[in-house]
Image (cartoon, rainbow, N blue to C red; front, side):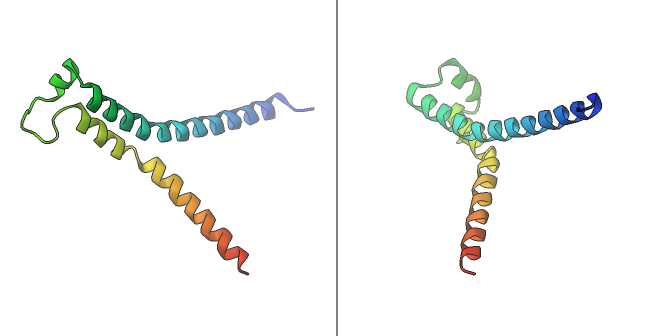
Length: 99
């Protein structure tokens, strides 16, 4: 039989693990979401929101499309970690298979 204290600690640990997994997936969702928003804004047009963000009309970074592209780039760290982790695992597997 499990004591209430150990059951609570296990549930807390499971909750923390679930929160880490959720945070990881949310981090991965940000980059493609912003990239899609940039594409849709470029195709459809930003309307009034684009006018608000385009304060410096002559600026290269004015408007919503560049903003979404920059946000996509800034949030790409989660994807870079995922890719580098998989490449490391593949490298370890291939090196281990040769022995």
